[in-house]
Length: 214
Image 1 (cartoon, rainbow, N blue to C red):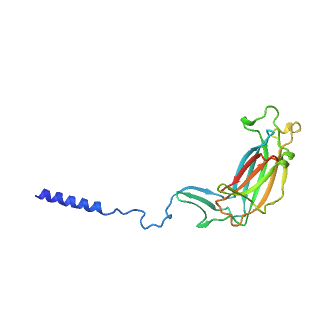
Image 2 (cartoon, one colour):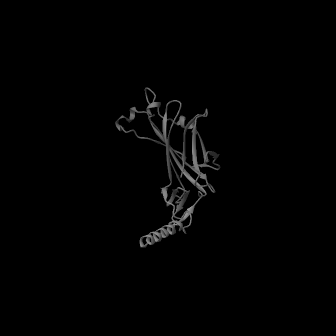
Image 3 (tube, rainbow, N blue to C red):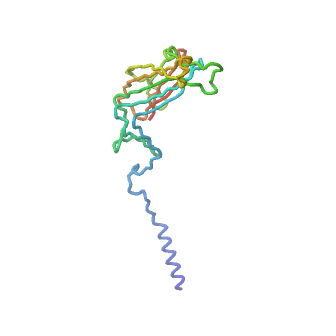
């Protein structure tokens, strides 16, 4: 009888434990406060971007750029979690761009990839080719493009690129780098949007496209 009594007590205790809900470690914690960051991106110094482009005459080129705005991007971080993406500077949440951003672009030619390389002498980018390019600047939200309004170009510049073999400089074609600066109004634009640049030829062919994306 003593053994049966112990068995009944043990069974009663087991049934009691099964009917009491276990305490969750998340109970009492506000939603979102303890989400783990999957990726963290820092934008000290601005937003950098680059891409390669090509023209129908087999000239290939590289575009490099930076989007900045005073010290706005210093200390700014993008934090991606399973639930959302947020931008923070310290403990402050930031959702919008400043009133304007400045974009610096440089363009210089480079050898084409193997699949696009022309047989024979490598052609170089010239001022006339640059002048023929058309540049469209857009704010991109998802898949929607909206032309950026009020864009101002500031101080374009052309610099000759010195050849690696200085002793052969007189026998080599002159190469150049084109630099541009644009001030783009951005008041009220969400940081989730990106600033897109589309370079096209006079016949509408896209030569290059790239975006400054946070």
